[in-house]
Length: 213
Image (tube, rainbow, N blue to C red; front, top):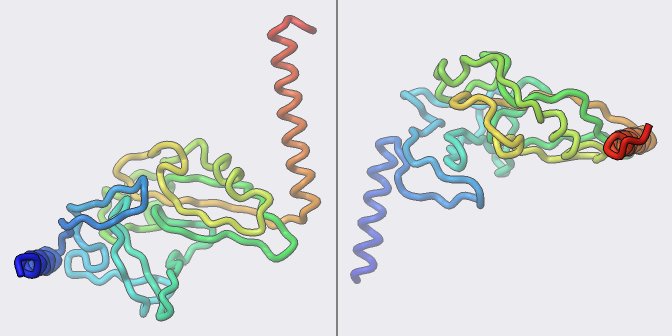
């Protein structure tokens, strides 16, 4: 009987907290992600309902793991990509990059940060979250090449940890990228060229270290 009363009390507290628009009861998050417990519901911020640009009738679910962001799902429970711009993935969002069968990805450009105030607006829509437009992670292209090059498809979850550090604290960021779909022959040729270049660099450094000319 005592456990039933305790459960009932916890339920009432949960409802009261949710009605206030704050999450203070711990949620389970994947390893390496901490739960944000002091943020308002990004699906209904300041009385404004957050909609998915590409599918306004989808269901908005707040995600408090790693950040306060929204996730949208269709009737079948599949997560929807809401960014209208191609080649962009908002922070904390997941997207699959793919090529047709028989072709592989070759990343040509990538930047994790923010270079525009208009792209990937946070649901809170606060200017302070978007006011840095020269935010660039120097490792962006290398990370994306390692993750995707040569694959027919790769799934990317955009997080600070993925790129080694936060390039601009307090700013809601996004990954902007461009890629080509190339034949397996082109992928293998590119990999061989990169391997040969690396070998030559190591060889030259070795010669220099031992005073060989």
